[in-house]
Image 1 (cartoon, rainbow, N blue to C red):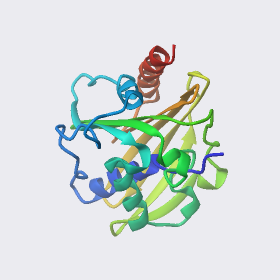
Image 2 (cartoon, rainbow, N blue to C red):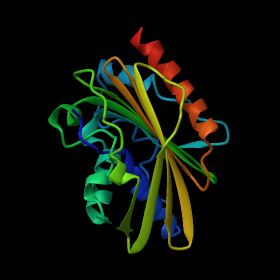
Image 3 (cartoon, rainbow, N blue to C red):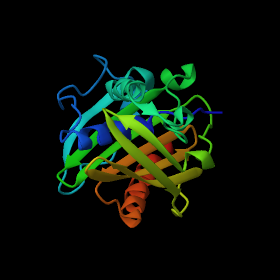
Length: 226
């Protein structure tokens, strides 16, 4: 069973940046890999990443390597450590656990896109088994956190996304804090032992747009698993 982790990290970073009127720092595109030579598996995972969406640009990555060692994962861990959550167990609920040795050492590829209207962050991880995170616990549907001195309220609901891959799940979170609000759409898809995780952050995230991104991501997963 996978403990929660990873996805909410980036949303915490997004809200911290939003509330502070600045975006989180991103690695330059030239830092494409966390190792001098990417393994054949991580190269395959890179092929599963989405192309640059229309009107957006690459803000981070693609970064390849062991999931737990990626800079994006480490930034997320630091964000959660810095935040004070009303319900610590909800930090990334329904996501992957980068503290689990199997997950931390799993080959992964991560990329982030940005535009004035928001951002998309996608990760593809090759796990050793066919594991999938449990659904979000009911107690994590609503909770608060202190993020960089700003009190943020998170409210999450599951979306009725059309089924994708072998297993899939999608949520929409509204984060309200300070003078600004944000929405975070999250998608998790499993095909075989591959898991695709995606976060879409903006002032308003439309479920239909999220579903279309999920369709494209699942299409890529299908191509590399056949």
